Image (cartoon, rainbow, N blue to C red; front, side, top):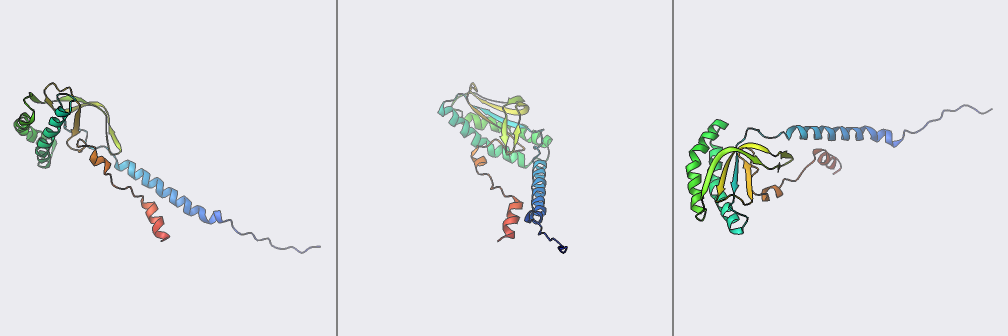
Length: 185
């Protein structure tokens, strides 16, 4: 008869690695949830600004860009000195004559009008958030007939200035990946 003996088996390597994989997946899920929660849209009660060019002709679009560059510092200053929406409304109301004067000086003889109204804005992407098409409280600056392409923005989240700034996004860094690289370096 054969003697009894104890059979010993080595634990598979998967049993040793599985807790680390679970921890990494858990950290990735936590990071995704934190990212989603911190991407809440900016204050919805914003004042937007829209410039409508006379036509799509390059000269009219250039006039629109020149006006935008002239009035942007005024709007930014009003925004910087405002602590609330009410203060911003007052500051912009005081700026209306200066904005119209600046636009008239650059409009090449075309009539310029500035009015605050509920204006329809197309959908716009700002980072990871998409502002839906809707009517928003806005200042609309119309040059001539106002039938050209336009740009628009919300004053609190600065999403109106040229998309060139969006192309210069920060490099995305995943802290889990950086942590893993640091462990093995």
